[in-house]
Image 1 (cartoon, rainbow, N blue to C red):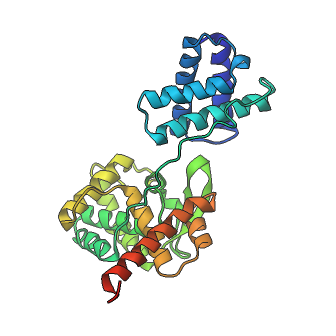
Image 2: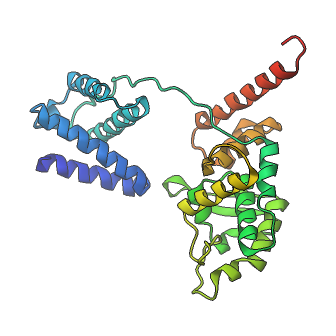
Image 3: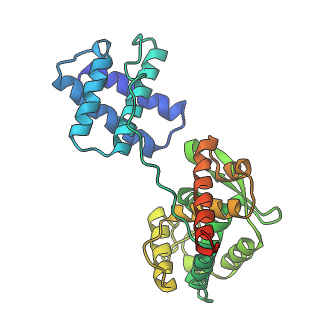
Length: 300
Protein backbone atom coordinates (compact mmCIF):
# COMPACT_ATOMS: atom_id res chain seq x y z
CA UNK A 1 0.00 0.00 0.00
CA UNK A 2 1.50 3.34 -1.01
CA UNK A 3 1.79 6.25 1.39
CA UNK A 4 -1.13 8.14 -0.13
CA UNK A 5 -3.57 5.25 0.29
CA UNK A 6 -2.25 4.55 3.79
CA UNK A 7 -2.91 8.16 4.79
CA UNK A 8 -6.46 8.14 3.41
CA UNK A 9 -7.18 4.85 5.18
CA UNK A 10 -5.95 6.25 8.50
CA UNK A 11 -8.14 9.35 8.10
CA UNK A 12 -11.15 7.16 7.31
CA UNK A 13 -10.53 4.96 10.37
CA UNK A 14 -10.37 8.05 12.60
CA UNK A 15 -13.60 9.36 11.05
CA UNK A 16 -15.46 6.13 11.79
CA UNK A 17 -14.16 5.97 15.33
CA UNK A 18 -14.63 9.60 16.33
CA UNK A 19 -17.58 10.82 14.26
CA UNK A 20 -19.51 7.61 13.57
CA UNK A 21 -18.79 5.94 16.93
CA UNK A 22 -18.35 2.54 15.27
CA UNK A 23 -17.11 -0.32 17.40
CA UNK A 24 -13.52 -1.60 17.15
CA UNK A 25 -14.92 -4.84 15.68
CA UNK A 26 -16.72 -2.99 12.85
CA UNK A 27 -13.71 -0.77 12.12
CA UNK A 28 -11.48 -3.84 11.92
CA UNK A 29 -13.55 -5.28 9.04
CA UNK A 30 -13.69 -1.95 7.22
CA UNK A 31 -9.90 -1.81 7.37
CA UNK A 32 -9.48 -5.40 6.13
CA UNK A 33 -11.95 -4.84 3.27
CA UNK A 34 -10.17 -1.69 2.15
CA UNK A 35 -6.72 -3.25 2.39
CA UNK A 36 -7.92 -6.06 0.10
CA UNK A 37 -9.24 -3.46 -2.34
CA UNK A 38 -5.97 -1.53 -2.27
CA UNK A 39 -4.09 -4.76 -3.06
CA UNK A 40 -6.39 -5.22 -6.06
CA UNK A 41 -5.62 -1.66 -7.25
CA UNK A 42 -1.88 -2.33 -6.99
CA UNK A 43 -2.22 -5.57 -8.95
CA UNK A 44 -4.14 -3.68 -11.68
CA UNK A 45 -1.48 -0.97 -11.84
CA UNK A 46 -3.86 1.71 -10.54
CA UNK A 47 -1.72 4.11 -8.52
CA UNK A 48 -4.23 6.85 -7.67
CA UNK A 49 -7.82 6.86 -6.44
CA UNK A 50 -8.64 9.39 -9.18
CA UNK A 51 -8.04 6.56 -11.66
CA UNK A 52 -10.69 4.33 -10.06
CA UNK A 53 -13.87 4.35 -12.14
CA UNK A 54 -16.98 2.25 -12.61
CA UNK A 55 -15.15 -0.32 -14.83
CA UNK A 56 -12.62 -0.93 -12.05
CA UNK A 57 -15.49 -1.45 -9.61
CA UNK A 58 -17.15 -3.98 -11.91
CA UNK A 59 -13.83 -5.80 -12.35
CA UNK A 60 -13.32 -5.96 -8.59
CA UNK A 61 -16.86 -7.28 -8.08
CA UNK A 62 -16.22 -9.99 -10.69
CA UNK A 63 -12.96 -10.93 -8.99
CA UNK A 64 -14.72 -11.32 -5.61
CA UNK A 65 -17.23 -13.72 -7.15
CA UNK A 66 -14.45 -15.69 -8.88
CA UNK A 67 -12.71 -16.11 -5.52
CA UNK A 68 -15.83 -17.77 -4.14
CA UNK A 69 -16.84 -15.23 -1.51
CA UNK A 70 -20.37 -15.57 -0.15
CA UNK A 71 -23.01 -13.03 -1.18
CA UNK A 72 -23.01 -11.55 2.32
CA UNK A 73 -19.22 -11.06 2.27
CA UNK A 74 -19.27 -9.51 -1.21
CA UNK A 75 -22.05 -7.15 -0.17
CA UNK A 76 -20.11 -6.11 2.93
CA UNK A 77 -16.90 -5.47 0.99
CA UNK A 78 -18.67 -3.35 -1.63
CA UNK A 79 -20.47 -1.42 1.10
CA UNK A 80 -17.15 -0.73 2.86
CA UNK A 81 -15.58 0.64 -0.31
CA UNK A 82 -18.67 2.71 -1.13
CA UNK A 83 -18.54 4.29 2.34
CA UNK A 84 -14.84 4.99 1.90
CA UNK A 85 -15.39 6.86 -1.38
CA UNK A 86 -18.32 8.72 0.13
CA UNK A 87 -15.93 9.95 2.83
CA UNK A 88 -13.35 10.93 0.20
CA UNK A 89 -15.98 12.96 -1.66
CA UNK A 90 -16.91 14.74 1.56
CA UNK A 91 -13.25 15.62 2.06
CA UNK A 92 -13.02 16.75 -1.61
CA UNK A 93 -10.30 14.20 -2.33
CA UNK A 94 -12.22 12.62 -5.23
CA UNK A 95 -15.02 14.04 -7.37
CA UNK A 96 -17.24 10.98 -7.70
CA UNK A 97 -18.01 7.66 -6.05
CA UNK A 98 -17.35 4.90 -8.63
CA UNK A 99 -19.16 2.39 -6.39
CA UNK A 100 -22.34 4.45 -5.98
CA UNK A 101 -24.12 2.75 -8.90
CA UNK A 102 -22.50 -0.65 -8.50
CA UNK A 103 -25.28 -3.12 -7.73
CA UNK A 104 -24.68 -5.50 -4.86
CA UNK A 105 -25.66 -9.17 -5.06
CA UNK A 106 -29.05 -9.95 -3.60
CA UNK A 107 -28.76 -11.81 -0.35
CA UNK A 108 -30.91 -14.71 0.73
CA UNK A 109 -32.91 -13.54 3.71
CA UNK A 110 -32.79 -16.14 6.45
CA UNK A 111 -35.49 -15.98 9.06
CA UNK A 112 -34.15 -15.53 12.60
CA UNK A 113 -34.16 -18.66 14.71
CA UNK A 114 -36.11 -18.41 17.94
CA UNK A 115 -37.43 -20.56 20.78
CA UNK A 116 -41.08 -21.45 21.21
CA UNK A 117 -42.59 -20.60 24.57
CA UNK A 118 -42.58 -24.28 25.58
CA UNK A 119 -38.85 -24.43 24.85
CA UNK A 120 -38.22 -21.35 26.97
CA UNK A 121 -39.97 -23.08 29.86
CA UNK A 122 -37.59 -26.02 29.42
CA UNK A 123 -34.60 -23.67 29.52
CA UNK A 124 -35.85 -22.01 32.71
CA UNK A 125 -36.39 -25.45 34.26
CA UNK A 126 -32.77 -26.28 33.44
CA UNK A 127 -31.68 -23.37 35.67
CA UNK A 128 -33.47 -24.61 38.79
CA UNK A 129 -31.29 -24.93 41.86
CA UNK A 130 -30.18 -23.07 44.97
CA UNK A 131 -26.43 -23.10 44.28
CA UNK A 132 -24.68 -19.89 43.22
CA UNK A 133 -24.19 -20.85 39.56
CA UNK A 134 -27.82 -21.88 39.12
CA UNK A 135 -28.98 -18.58 40.60
CA UNK A 136 -26.65 -16.66 38.28
CA UNK A 137 -27.72 -18.67 35.23
CA UNK A 138 -31.38 -18.11 36.02
CA UNK A 139 -30.84 -14.35 36.35
CA UNK A 140 -28.84 -14.27 33.11
CA UNK A 141 -31.52 -16.13 31.14
CA UNK A 142 -34.32 -14.00 32.62
CA UNK A 143 -32.54 -10.75 31.69
CA UNK A 144 -31.72 -11.83 28.12
CA UNK A 145 -35.29 -13.00 27.51
CA UNK A 146 -37.00 -10.12 29.34
CA UNK A 147 -35.06 -7.31 27.65
CA UNK A 148 -33.94 -8.62 24.24
CA UNK A 149 -30.54 -6.97 24.74
CA UNK A 150 -27.45 -8.11 22.85
CA UNK A 151 -24.97 -10.31 24.71
CA UNK A 152 -22.36 -7.52 24.50
CA UNK A 153 -24.83 -5.20 26.22
CA UNK A 154 -25.65 -7.83 28.83
CA UNK A 155 -22.09 -8.53 29.97
CA UNK A 156 -21.49 -4.78 30.31
CA UNK A 157 -24.41 -4.18 32.68
CA UNK A 158 -23.09 -2.55 35.86
CA UNK A 159 -24.80 -2.72 39.23
CA UNK A 160 -25.51 1.01 39.04
CA UNK A 161 -27.30 0.57 35.69
CA UNK A 162 -30.23 -1.33 37.24
CA UNK A 163 -33.25 0.46 38.67
CA UNK A 164 -35.38 -2.06 40.53
CA UNK A 165 -38.02 0.51 41.44
CA UNK A 166 -38.86 1.33 37.82
CA UNK A 167 -37.69 -2.08 36.50
CA UNK A 168 -35.32 -0.60 33.94
CA UNK A 169 -31.70 -1.07 32.87
CA UNK A 170 -29.47 1.54 31.27
CA UNK A 171 -27.53 -0.15 28.45
CA UNK A 172 -24.91 1.01 25.98
CA UNK A 173 -25.48 -0.49 22.53
CA UNK A 174 -23.93 -0.36 19.08
CA UNK A 175 -22.07 2.81 18.20
CA UNK A 176 -22.00 3.72 21.91
CA UNK A 177 -25.70 4.57 21.69
CA UNK A 178 -27.42 4.43 25.06
CA UNK A 179 -31.00 3.42 25.80
CA UNK A 180 -33.27 2.28 28.61
CA UNK A 181 -34.71 -1.25 28.51
CA UNK A 182 -37.52 -2.69 30.61
CA UNK A 183 -37.75 -5.93 32.57
CA UNK A 184 -40.61 -7.63 34.41
CA UNK A 185 -41.01 -9.04 37.89
CA UNK A 186 -39.70 -12.52 36.97
CA UNK A 187 -36.38 -11.04 35.85
CA UNK A 188 -36.37 -8.61 38.77
CA UNK A 189 -36.82 -11.40 41.31
CA UNK A 190 -34.17 -13.57 39.65
CA UNK A 191 -31.59 -10.75 39.60
CA UNK A 192 -32.37 -9.71 43.19
CA UNK A 193 -31.97 -13.33 44.32
CA UNK A 194 -28.67 -13.64 42.43
CA UNK A 195 -27.29 -10.43 43.90
CA UNK A 196 -28.33 -11.35 47.42
CA UNK A 197 -27.28 -15.01 47.49
CA UNK A 198 -24.85 -15.77 44.64
CA UNK A 199 -22.76 -12.87 43.38
CA UNK A 200 -20.69 -12.43 46.55
CA UNK A 201 -20.24 -16.20 46.80
CA UNK A 202 -18.83 -16.33 43.28
CA UNK A 203 -16.60 -13.32 43.96
CA UNK A 204 -14.98 -15.28 46.86
CA UNK A 205 -13.53 -12.19 48.46
CA UNK A 206 -11.84 -11.01 45.27
CA UNK A 207 -11.55 -7.34 44.52
CA UNK A 208 -15.01 -6.08 43.64
CA UNK A 209 -15.85 -4.77 40.17
CA UNK A 210 -18.97 -2.98 38.94
CA UNK A 211 -20.30 -5.63 36.54
CA UNK A 212 -23.51 -7.47 37.37
CA UNK A 213 -22.72 -10.89 35.96
CA UNK A 214 -19.61 -12.76 37.08
CA UNK A 215 -18.05 -16.04 36.05
CA UNK A 216 -17.26 -19.01 38.29
CA UNK A 217 -13.94 -17.40 39.30
CA UNK A 218 -15.48 -14.06 40.23
CA UNK A 219 -14.35 -12.10 37.17
CA UNK A 220 -16.66 -10.23 34.82
CA UNK A 221 -18.60 -12.57 32.55
CA UNK A 222 -17.60 -12.45 28.85
CA UNK A 223 -19.47 -13.02 25.59
CA UNK A 224 -17.78 -16.41 25.29
CA UNK A 225 -18.80 -17.27 28.83
CA UNK A 226 -22.46 -16.50 28.08
CA UNK A 227 -22.38 -18.80 25.05
CA UNK A 228 -20.93 -21.61 27.14
CA UNK A 229 -23.57 -21.17 29.86
CA UNK A 230 -26.42 -21.18 27.36
CA UNK A 231 -25.13 -24.28 25.57
CA UNK A 232 -24.93 -26.09 28.91
CA UNK A 233 -28.58 -25.11 29.50
CA UNK A 234 -29.50 -26.61 26.12
CA UNK A 235 -27.84 -29.91 27.05
CA UNK A 236 -29.56 -30.01 30.44
CA UNK A 237 -32.93 -29.15 28.90
CA UNK A 238 -32.46 -31.93 26.32
CA UNK A 239 -33.18 -29.53 23.46
CA UNK A 240 -31.59 -30.27 20.10
CA UNK A 241 -29.02 -28.09 18.40
CA UNK A 242 -26.84 -25.28 19.69
CA UNK A 243 -27.99 -21.98 21.09
CA UNK A 244 -26.61 -18.59 20.20
CA UNK A 245 -27.25 -15.66 22.56
CA UNK A 246 -28.86 -13.75 19.68
CA UNK A 247 -31.58 -16.42 19.55
CA UNK A 248 -32.93 -15.02 22.83
CA UNK A 249 -33.05 -11.55 21.26
CA UNK A 250 -34.95 -13.05 18.33
CA UNK A 251 -37.23 -14.89 20.76
CA UNK A 252 -37.93 -11.69 22.71
CA UNK A 253 -39.04 -9.85 19.57
CA UNK A 254 -41.01 -12.74 18.10
CA UNK A 255 -42.96 -13.42 21.30
CA UNK A 256 -43.83 -9.73 21.69
CA UNK A 257 -45.23 -9.58 18.16
CA UNK A 258 -47.06 -12.88 18.56
CA UNK A 259 -48.81 -11.45 21.60
CA UNK A 260 -49.89 -8.26 19.85
CA UNK A 261 -47.07 -5.71 20.31
CA UNK A 262 -46.72 -3.16 17.53
CA UNK A 263 -43.62 -3.04 15.36
CA UNK A 264 -42.53 0.47 16.40
CA UNK A 265 -42.51 -0.50 20.07
CA UNK A 266 -40.43 -3.59 19.36
CA UNK A 267 -38.05 -1.44 17.28
CA UNK A 268 -37.51 0.90 20.24
CA UNK A 269 -37.03 -1.96 22.69
CA UNK A 270 -34.45 -3.64 20.46
CA UNK A 271 -32.61 -0.37 19.84
CA UNK A 272 -32.89 -0.64 16.04
CA UNK A 273 -32.23 2.57 14.13
CA UNK A 274 -34.24 1.44 11.12
CA UNK A 275 -37.68 -0.15 11.13
CA UNK A 276 -36.53 -2.43 8.31
CA UNK A 277 -34.21 -4.19 10.76
CA UNK A 278 -37.22 -5.04 12.91
CA UNK A 279 -39.53 -6.01 10.06
CA UNK A 280 -37.77 -9.35 9.61
CA UNK A 281 -39.64 -10.53 12.71
CA UNK A 282 -42.99 -10.00 10.99
CA UNK A 283 -41.91 -12.71 8.53
CA UNK A 284 -41.20 -14.99 11.47
CA UNK A 285 -44.62 -14.41 13.01
CA UNK A 286 -46.36 -14.86 9.64
CA UNK A 287 -44.52 -18.14 9.13
CA UNK A 288 -45.56 -19.22 12.63
CA UNK A 289 -49.20 -18.42 11.77
CA UNK A 290 -48.93 -20.29 8.49
CA UNK A 291 -47.55 -23.41 10.14
CA UNK A 292 -50.26 -23.29 12.80
CA UNK A 293 -52.94 -22.90 10.13
CA UNK A 294 -51.58 -25.79 8.05
CA UNK A 295 -51.36 -28.01 11.11
CA UNK A 296 -54.82 -27.39 12.56
CA UNK A 297 -57.26 -26.21 9.86
CA UNK A 298 -59.32 -29.18 8.61
CA UNK A 299 -59.12 -28.02 4.98
CA UNK A 300 -55.59 -26.62 4.92
